[in-house]
Length: 526
Image (cartoon, rainbow, N blue to C red):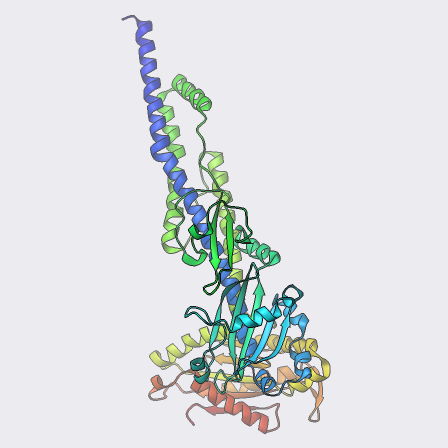
């Protein structure tokens, strides 16, 4: 065999070996990794959309709860007046909160008052009729007789398909601000998932999607009966430019189609001309260089894919290493990390909405309840004492009637800001309890210290000089009821936070009886 023939044979063998090696790497390592990565990304987009829709619905539930658990609304159901509606439930307030419909219904399921945006006014009778559509065990908007008899807060919320559109609904029993007492009826709020809300959710979740009436949609040729339910959380198994799900009612044939449009939609195609060119170039240089370059390409992709796979187990997405030998991989890592930062920022924002009062900016009742769970746990397990203050703005109804709802909102915001400034010096939490009531929890349980803090709060509110001429006083004032929980109290396990709160309410009542603009302090159990 001549040297020329041997060289040609060796070169052909080397070319064939490297080709088979590249093909093996491509089909057995590269493509499966990329496919898994795209599937995981599409699954993550679906999970993000699911979470964003749920969080958006939860914000409606919180707002409905804040309105329903309200002494003044209880009085209004018993004695409806136009003054109450004009002062406390103006249309512009619901428009600002993106609420499309509000219904106040008594315990006999009689409609007392309603508000509907122009987009739903033509469907008023149908929407009211929908409330009484309780012919399935899986669907009920209004409270049942058992829930009314419980005399405590109960809520119902979910999604409905109405006139070819998706709506959120939330219903909460109407009862006093304490959360216990005689139920006067129920409050229902409705939010239409329209294009504006879809755009907002898309911006927050970084996911592009659309919602259409499935009975008129032409985006898919498959039968809607074969589509999965959106809230089934079934895993995505095939790569596609978009995936479709259904949201349907359990009591009629109304259904909408949710379409999620993915960012990565297909596997990369092998360019044989480029592959052969690269292969010939590598053969001319050295076969070992090809192996080294392959390792530099494959390993980062495997790590990238593993990081995404691991995130599906614990719902935590870690940043990618940004130091790569190849610039394109470094750019991809940087872009991924930037996307992750944006996602975390949006996630934190959505979580903040659930525990922050939308008017005053301080902690709302939901956040207060989460904080009290930790305080009560320490009290029960470690005998750690604490103090609770209930603060009520004096004659606030008179203030609202005289100066208007917007001035009332400004006054509540100023009071909340003053509370935060005072509490910045102490170990505690200030929260809006509901309406014009605020609640403060302090880690201190020394009687004199707590009395000093209460007086400091009372004086700081009066020094705001918010005009409210009543009871021979020039300025808006507050009354404070304080209860101090001893760290040596026996049998603490039999008490809960509602017991402490009741004592604070009693002291607040005594402060009101004493002429307002004062603080009353007692020891828990006395």
